[in-house]
Length: 387
Ligand SMILES: [Zn+2]
Ligand SMILES: [Zn+2]
Image (cartoon, rainbow, N blue to C red; front, side):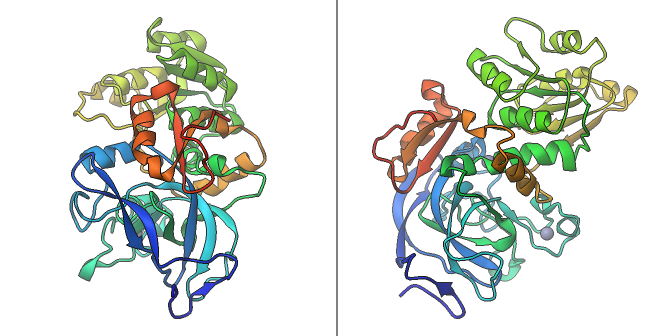
């Protein structure tokens, strides 16, 4: 019988003892197996996972390990379940939980910080100083599902109540998986960056964070919003999500294109989402003096950077890890008000059993895939048309 002391469940949502779960073996190797359904502790709930999106960071974790950190090391052959961009239904409440009700639809953000370190106290729980310290004698209560604790490529997962975002019934499962992506762009622009209406923004790289970065910048009142990239089909989606201009860097130099479109003086913000080798040097030449560059993509190699240009021009450069300061709640508010249509970046849906195929679509961009979603139930065919 599923349960634990003080745990509340409902006959409307029967919970099995065992569930399907994908686990990571050697690099690049996923196996479908069975795991016990986890039981929520204090301040946690059990989420029945209804949909999960595949993120570029999942592909990093599955092939290279980092930034996942399991028991102080790489996540391979540790019975670890990756996946982090999921949504679902609350089906069990841990002791004392009254913030959410059984049957409530929610989406999740990834990081539950330790709650006691300096960064957590500042609301920067995605940069928790006790990252990954959640096992054995080092248990600091930190969780980043799909990175330091089991994630969502399975049927159920426990989440701290601080990581839940309530969603309305008007939001589809697929759209709800995108709240955390929009929340990441929101955190980079507003909480970390300080964007206010009327400032100018360039997004480099039309991946999921870049495209939703365009949408968030636009609804925040940024003008102009300029998107750069190499694929016309993705640049077109950027225009639909609110970009005022796009620059195809196959046809025009990215820096010259941006300067031409913004009167030659550069923009206030660049969100760098391409990870291209020269992206940082281009970004610091796209911003104006005193401008800010948010780095949201990671290249695999170290990159030479023109530090003198940064110093002479008082440019701010900062990395972003995830979606801190509850930015997901603000992103969800825009999405539930239909201020932008995040579903434009959702292209494919597969069944949970077909995860390896879904991953191949996301990785190789098969059939122009952008955001690929996996659902445990209710997927009749292998591929569902884009919404
Ligand atoms: Zn992600
Ligand atoms: Zn912390």
